[in-house]
Image 1: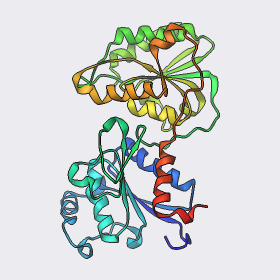
Image 2 (image 1 turned 180 degrees about the vertical axis):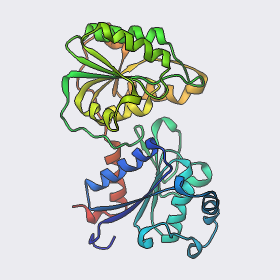
Image 3 (image 1 turned 30 degrees about the horizontal axis):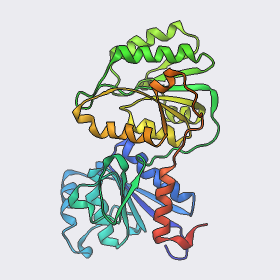
Length: 323
């Protein structure tokens, strides 16, 4: 980027997974808040097998031998990626153009040292290195629009994962009933996710018919962007502890986030650590505390990790271009 004339040219390498794309686009949104940005996207999911294999070997070639025919004008100032399938291509672009490359989440050891910045969630640690920037959860595209309605609430369900936790349907439904029966001044939108068992959805669909202050939404029936609109609308949000991404999205949107507990298994150690860190930082309220009736502040802390990461990128390479 020369003198800020064209703006910062950013290439985002994606793998076709919406969750990964949200992390990268969160960084782009943060950059756009500070300076002019031109963004292009390249998906490795669109590459045929021969090209995917070629990209894996390109990092061993000299810069002049790395092809970039998939880039408009073959020019960019920064490459951003998320997901292990994107790393080889992002580093190929970095090598060919001599530009910074940053990634969200923790790359494999063999790739880690080649990235200029790795935005690593705290619960992934311990990870050390001069290129490691520790974040509170993964960055995302949400931010606080300050338009929440205290009379509207959201309950988000994760689901089964035999390796990480026990899905106790009976206990979960009992806890949801306690919430909607106690907080009748709030209208609750209750939503499933891809991992939510069909039996749980069927039970909740029947249950909500007995209450005037709750509605059940099957995630398959909601239009694109529905959950993001709910984050911006609902002040109080409950999320099952296994749904890490939804917890951090709700926090980024400025919601008061409450946690519905799960019983962790050995394979869920990282998720259990994440829950502990959230409680330690006073970012979320556990069900047990809510159930006890103890008065706590409604103004729990919120986060904006995407902006914090973007500001770090700008401070490192383009501090004079902030508008």
